[in-house]
Image (cartoon, rainbow, N blue to C red; front, side, top):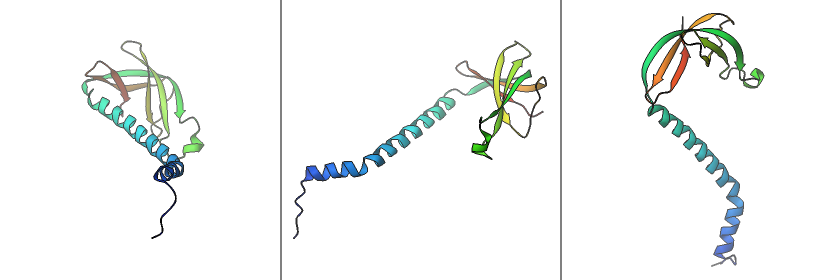
Length: 126
């Protein structure tokens, strides 16, 4: 039998050198996946307990992402800065580009009150 003269310690060092980039990549991927799953668990732990229909006035519109050429066909949407009619609060809401709203227009919004006190908003179709 042909036996190698490389010690076990040296083999481990060679393996570490060869695969260190892959280990780092896998670690970053796992960390990213863990962060995403934590966000999902937090949403499930804070369910919507009440909804309310309110009206808002569009004050400003911007296209997201900022560089639309970099992501043609990938989640292009508008972000609207709105002022609510009932309490004069300013909020930002995202919506699809297929349903644009002009600055100054009045739009229906759904206020979603969550179990732990947070409010989120979404534009209604209509």
